[in-house]
Image (cartoon, rainbow, N blue to C red; front, top):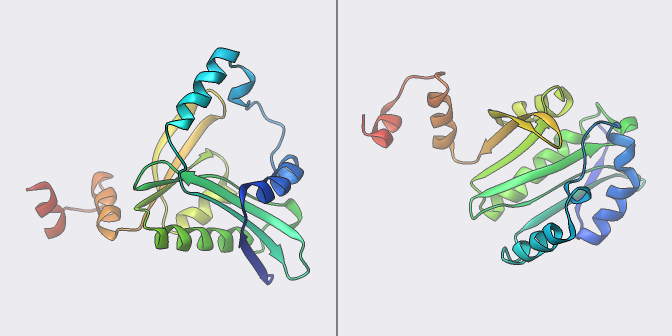
Length: 188
């Protein structure tokens, strides 16, 4: 694997890389940007409602090789006091399959666990195995499917830092029988 440096960037610096390279990693598909179809009134309402949320935690990571070449990114934001949405990640095509995404993912999860988040989730095109498989290997669990007007069929993945929550997901999915912890939790 390449020697890589994963840095936390502010939004302005991160966006320079994101907008320069996003078309290199995302195919021309049938997704769209919500803002493109909203009326001025709807856009005004969205802006006003966003102000109610204050300043949630945001994480923008960028990966560089030892020569300073940009390799890829990940960014996301806090949705609640317990939940972080890992919104968008990518590795430039020429650097894929070299362990870079796994390194970005590991760094992201370490930062989010240290911040105190209980759960990280992400949404992916149902056939995006190049992201889904590394996340499953990192302990993410498939939690649901979604039909989204902007992106089509999506898989939701959840990562729980609390081992009991992971165990509850296995129980809920029918993978394990209730042990003493689960019986106590559900009073069964």
